[in-house]
Image (tube, rainbow, N blue to C red; front, side):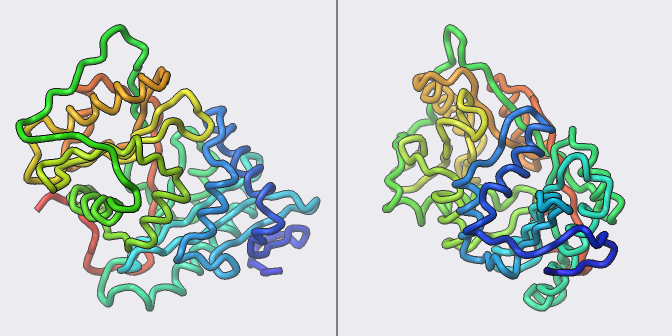
Length: 336
């Protein structure tokens, strides 16, 4: 048991036991997701592979809060997988009926203390802020975060497009561009480098070590390299879309997890061409909708591209942060 100040004595706390707790963790996450939008947003594979990330040590980086009957009340998981250790992520879930109580506060207090213990790992003099996220409809979790001192930082959108239309516009490729799908084993290092390059001018960007990225992309997220579209200019990847045939809880939704164009190839219509190609491929697989996530205040104007492609906002998600140490901000926060 891990005693936490302010937690009533009939609650218990402990690290997650992967061999025993998978079903209970899934039940808690599904209960929260159903409360928000009426469909799950994680499955057993995602939970298991999140615990298997190279940077995760489950006995050190997780907290499970249980009520008097031993039912899951709240969950906190601490992820600090980027090299600079300046923007750790706290995965936080609290049972909807307990969001205004001690279980939520205890999990967040544990997360704050866990973040502080990693401060010596951060780049000296750098700003360190822990990040978490919550659906905009989840007022209970937002209330828990805000009463514990978390500040809203960013608004993200989920955007979708209807693929069940008579004619999806074909892509218009810039001269010299050829499209191919990925060979996961051969292309993964180059895709990692391109993603880092293409997203280096997106708000909050920090480089992710290759092994952490590879596990997240291919184990936590289900890799479908036949839906990873690489726009090639000779031997170079100019841009890409990494897609999935469905999203957990939404089997009819094709998902574009990454769409990026490298700077030298921007403003030529390449992003729109890749996006339209992805739409047509997902439609060919029988998907009536396609979606993606985007920063609503995108520094590169990504929202305008998606609106031009016919996409609309269907959900909002808020990023919250907890400042652990002020200093020089190593993240991308503006275009240079």
